[in-house]
Image 1: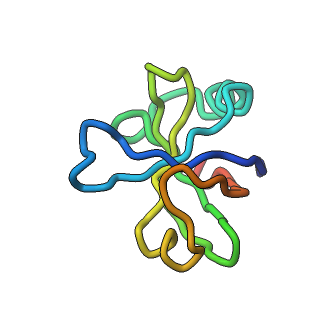
Image 2: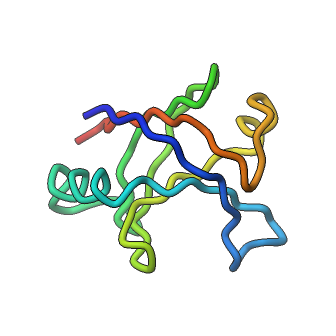
Length: 100
């Protein structure tokens, strides 16, 4: 499964001092992923993905966020720097599920 969406970067309040930056996947896409990835998952319910933002591509995991009812994707500092994006900016994100 490969999905493409636009999302705003945000900083996790609980770790604001460490600038953990994320984008939230749309709820409808998150529901589809939950159906596909049903069953035992890695720690915290993580799902392995390959991600692209601009010219940057990397492998990571998305995590379910019960508050939002959606998966969240961490965006590394190196990617934010390379793509010239920061909290509050919108980015076009490509996510591909892997290791299912």
